[in-house]
Amino acid sequence: MTPGRDPRTHQGTRRKNLILMGGLFGLVFGMIGLSFAAVPLYDLFCKVTGFGGTTQRAEGPAGEILDRTVKVRFNADVNGALPWGFRPEIHQMEVRIGESAMMSYRAVNNSDEPIVGTATYNVTPDKTGIYFNKIQCFCFTEQRLEPGQSVDMPVYFFVDPAMADDPKLDDVQTITLSYTFFRAHGGGAAGQVTSINE
Image (cartoon, rainbow, N blue to C red):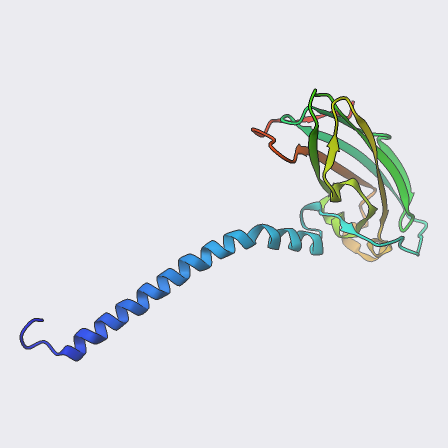
């Protein structure tokens, strides 16, 4: 120690450095923890608010059916890394707000190996996501298809009657429900998304 230096000053500086170092380590570990929590928290935020066109999930029909109608268009895309065909049974239907409706999408595995796929989904305009409710949907589970196998996957849905009370949605006449299928396991490199509605 330097002659004439107060030992209490030396201990105080060392203590401040240890507190600073502890704070920095805490900050780093906190940032790592937040990065792991970010995806589930963002997913929860989207589901609760309908942000980005995220649809809602309902246990049963709305109960109230209004006279106002909307057209619901159905879109199907598949990621280029997934060798599946995927298309809606119909491209559009008109439903009354609050009315439950059902339609199906068909997927076919065009490869010579079993593949598990999973679908992401949203609706446009984005502002309708909070009002679009799915009672039954294949998007909540992974789908395994054997080589050449095809499957019809139903979607049972309704548009919440509360939409009619939202003045920001007075201009909405058409809602588009879109799905994109991706390889769920061992999918390799992500490919280009290709529309297969035709």
